[in-house]
Image (cartoon, rainbow, N blue to C red; front, side, top):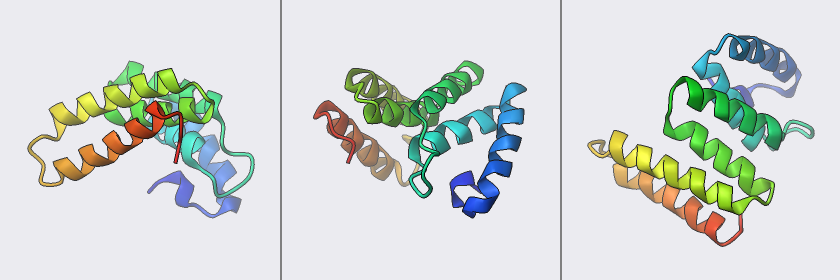
Length: 126
């Protein structure tokens, strides 16, 4: 279950628990926090580029993976730092090429990431 599917009244409690886990270098908590802070548009005040990048970096230091690169790419793009967004999106694509190439939905996943990459190259987020 992802935190951004919680009711707005439950979000502060969920964030509190995830941030406690992140302090203990829990990779899942860091990944969820990075994703939440870069993508949660449902409630004013939760989009936080700095926190998305902070937790994305922490997640990558614990275990390199494509998801923190994706969330950091979006955060950088939302902040207007498109060069960094492109760099992280390219790194996410490389992880997917290595990790998912034998999956049935590989082309679909790769296509979504490449579409985002083109948006960032064109200095856009949507």
